[in-house]
Length: 164
Image (cartoon, rainbow, N blue to C red; front, side, top):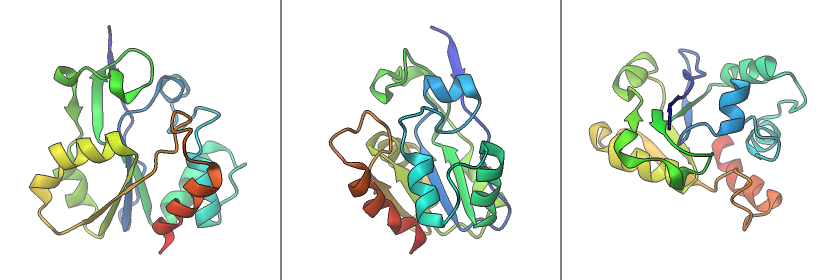
């Protein structure tokens, strides 16, 4: 099984809010884009909440997202995994992104939203202890199509928290 590498963060220096996933899935890695799986609700939900046209090309969508003060990244920068499920990540292979450097470069970030349980667990285990209580962290329901127990409308309602 080969080593998978994630993406650099999407962030401008003035970012105030960070949204974290766990690790890009196979469709995202193949496309070179965050949340590229056609059934993942991330972009439709976030764009609806922030008033961005979800039909815009990826580069324009991410530019507008960042200009609104939001940053996007993953807890893991690399790992070994078969398929796309977080449960298939080999624990011994996990490489956590460099959050100390990221937060130093983005000092206005005051909130972190975690896209699903895996991102929340990884963040709380590997990143949060070094942060102390300086940044508010909130787990949101995963936008992944694997989270089929939540409807789009229910996910959208929960994700409206990022705009408050």
